[in-house]
Image 1 (cartoon, rainbow, N blue to C red):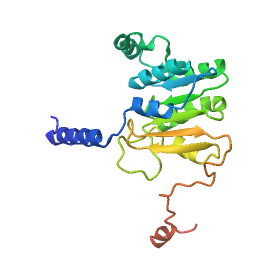
Image 2 (tube, rainbow, N blue to C red):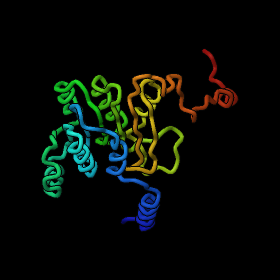
Image 3 (spheres, helix red, strand yellow):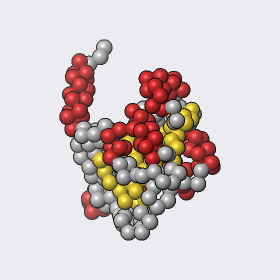
Length: 225
């Protein structure tokens, strides 16, 4: 039997999140790509299709970019297409595991200008997605991770599993300028590849980490054999 208090708790959580959320996925995508202009071939990639696909397709059409959308659910893709009419006619959908799809894209294109990582709720999977694309991300390239947050962020819209490994990886790099968007999407983090390599500190460490060695020692050390 379902606990009625659980249902009340989840409804309260949804209400709080709707009040805290400032932007949906599409609004943030449009904001981050507002300054992108037509003039050269560009490539956009997303893992996990949905409302974000509509925003990306809109920007891609404006600037003449090629857009790939990767998802494991063929039925979801078909329904999205059906409901969107001609808005997604130029989108190249790839059905299957995102890692295989991204490997295929990386093999066919020399550069990726924008990547939205929003597939499996796994920190390891998301990091592996990024690592597949990393050789194709150069100065000016942008990355957006859903379910992600900067270390120490509070009042988030999701558990933020997807960014647990990738966000610290980007923060430790001298080539990525990283920004948290806790009130957008399901809490998101964006990063811009900086050719100067001066925006991020490679010495970065998680500020929440504390080496509690003194308390450990006071609890007693095991005997040395």
